[in-house]
Amino acid sequence: MAVLVIGTCDTKAAELAYARDCIRAAGLAAQLVDVGTRGGGDEADVTAAEVAGHHPDGAAAVLGATDRGVAVTAMAAALTRYLGTRDDIDAVLGLGGTGNTALVTAALRALPVGLPKLMVSTVASGNVAPYVGATDITMMHSVVDIAGLNAISRRVIANAAHAVAGMATWRAASGIGDRPAIGMTMFGVTTPCVTEIRRLLEQDHDCLVFHATGTGGQSMEKLADGGFLRGVIDATTTEVADYLVGGVFACSEDRFGAIARTGLPYVGSTGAVDMVNFGAMDTVPEKFRGRRLHVHNAQVTLMRTTPEENAAIGAWIAARLNLCPGPVRFLLPLGGVSAIDAPGQPFHDLAADEALFQALRRDLRQTADRQLIELPLHINDPEFAAALVREFRAIVTP
Image 1 (cartoon, rainbow, N blue to C red):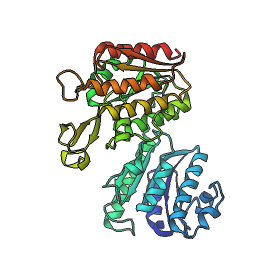
Image 2: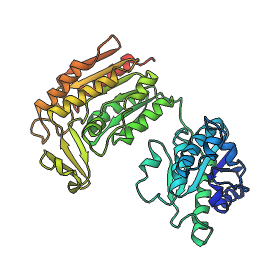
Image 3: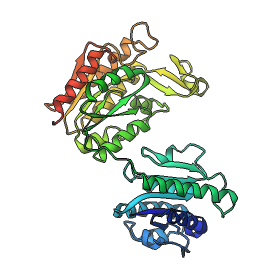
Image 4: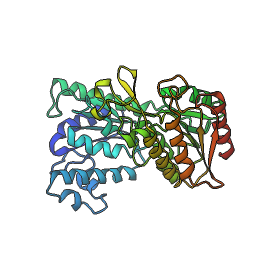
């Protein structure tokens, strides 16, 4: 087993070798993997040519590229495939600037959740969502550029090396196999529903709750694709609203894709699709300023979806669920889809909700395995949570 230190030896050989040697001094086996595209790499334990050889089109597709951007993208693909051939990785440490951060994290995102992954980067103090994605990459700001060993870079790199050594040494027990794991989606406005689901299931299931903020749904589906989940109770599909209307918590076009690929038992609902999310009030796009807005907190402003938008949301969800071959139960809470979609609450809108429900009734192709179930309940009623659990138990193999 080994800790891999990955970076471009053509520009950062000394820094990468220093990190590797710190890990070795801590008593762990460590290998320096070169992903440079400009030659060099005498310090490497795994050469750039060896990594590049894992590209689907061969090493020439990487090392023969004259455009640096093309070469870096090709090397990322090669590194992803190379790491996939290794079954002896304890942890991975990457070091680099913008290019190497993009290259290395692209490969790290393909590794299993739970395998330690640490990226020391010049961009780690900014928006790291494009680098981290839906997985568990730890980002560490390099403070100074990774361009030579000095009083600051030595300390930061050593801290990173010792941190990844600690992660590799002290691995937590996974707990997999103790209880079957279930993925669940939740938002603040559907918390009572999901809390009750957890109460009803957690004695015999490991309940993994994901905050429906775009990456939350992606993280749940990554675990589904990876075989970690027995099934999904997707009560909160609000990310679809942001995706279609333009909010900040949007899913990707692959939402529900893992359910289609795996055939996992799936129970879902329309939690919080009455809203589109933005940041603070002054970040709401000008074209939406005249809409029905609600300040959730100082950093989150909600916008009520219209009947037209809800019809599109319902149609999109139905089309995606129609691709799922496994057992599917989709429950409609006719009494309201969020805490603020109820009589007397700011987003109560019967016409908008009915447009959503009608689109699902029209477009979801019902079969023995794929069913739409309507209940005269609010999504946060305990009885609705009980119905979600009842349907889930009915379709999950004991």
